[in-house]
Image 1: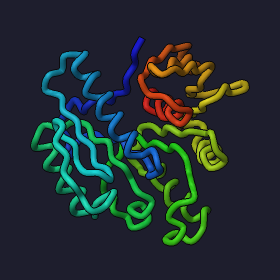
Image 2: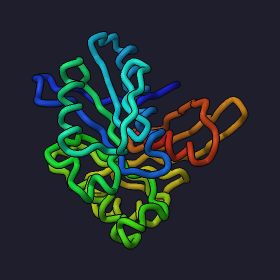
Image 3: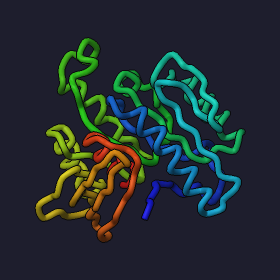
Length: 231
């Protein structure tokens, strides 16, 4: 079976589209693109023909295969709100947003209502700005304190992910690319991954049961990526 990730739109129109956001990492641009494709395919499958989605990330804005360049990974506050208003006017109901650590530290997403926050990993980036790994981590972790959050999705393959998950273990989906010993709460982990030149077959265990996921993507890093999108 093939599975995709989607989010329900509001039954009553609100001031802006529903948003999923992931903290910036080497795979963040990947996540925004896959979330966009997943939502579009799910919408098409359900025959919700009026559904549209969009994303904002470091390479530009994608709407119906049209890409617009932008200078910053996450734009300034006024630009973010202006573009969300534009999206809403165009009928967009879902936005996947790459939330950079710089933007979070500078409050560029202030007054944005984020529904779903995703954490993939933490690598040694942006230390010239943040000064230390701990400060960098706390900047990324601030995304998970947004008051409107409905769900947190956290990869626990590294120590920083585990630390973040422990903060919210009662209200977060734990994602792990290898089996978890005695898992509890909400979780997605890989029981088995079979890779070939044609793609990857994943056997996942979740708190709701076992699932088989097929993807044309290859590479161990994509095992985690696919698990996060599935979650």
